[in-house]
Image 1 (tube, each protein chain N blue to C red):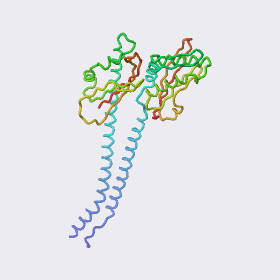
Image 2: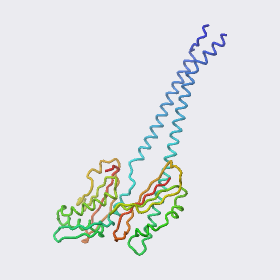
Image 3: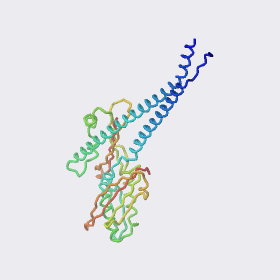
Image 4: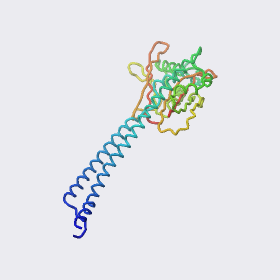
Length: 175
Length: 150
C-alpha cells in the first residue's frame, strides 16, 4: 500500500478506446473540413461580366475618335460611328483580300473599347467566316489557358449579305 | 485507507480517458460549428448575389425603357433619376451602393447612390450590367452599372 495509483487492465483498455475515439473524431473533422473547402473552391473562378452583353454593348458603342484609313479610297471614320459598323467595313475589306495592317489604327481603337469593357479580365475577339475560318482576331492569344473561360457570340452581316460569327472569349484570369 | 487509494488511482487513470473523449467531442463540435457558420455565410451571399442581379436587371430594363424617342437613353436623363426612391422598392431593406460609370470613351463616375445603413456588412452581393447611352456629343457611350448589396 504505497498510495501510488496503478493502471489496471480495464483502465488501459478504456484509455485505448478513448484514443481510438479521438483519432476517429479527428479524421471525421478533417473530412468535413476538406469537403467544405473543396465546395468553396469549386464555386470560384467566375467572372462578373456577361460576354454576350459585353459583345453587344461593344458593337453598339461609338468609336469615340476620328480615324483615317488608307485603303484604296481613303475612309474617314467619325467619332459617332459605331464599332460594329466599322468592324463590318474592315471584315468586308479583309474578305476582299486587303491586308489587315491597313486597319491597324482602327483595330487599336476597337481593342481599347473591348479592354475598357472587359477590364480586368483577359479577352479575345475572333471573327469567323464559314467554314470556320478566322478572318480577324483581336486581344490576348492565351485566353484558353485559364481555369474558366466564358464566351459570347453574335452574327454580323455585311452590305453584301455575307455573314460572320463574332465570338468574344473572356477568361477568369486578370490581365 | 485501501478503498481511498483505489479511488484516487481510479480517478487518475480516468483522467486521460476523459481528456481524449473531451478532445474528440470538442473537435467534432468546433468543426461542425465552423462548417455550419461557413455554409450560412455562403447561403447568405448567394441570396445577396441573386438580389443584386435582380436589382441590376430591373434597373437595366428601366434604363432601356426610358429612351423615349431617342435610339438610346440619354446620360442627362439617367443622372436626373431619383435612385433613392427606386432602391427603396427594390432592395427589400438591405443596404446598397449603386454606381454608374462611363467606361468608354472617357472613364468617369456619373451616378452614385448609397443607402444610409450604417451596419457592418457580413456578406455582400455584387452584380454588373453594361448598357449603351447617348452623351451630350451624341456619342453612344458604354455605361457600367454596379450594385453592391449587404
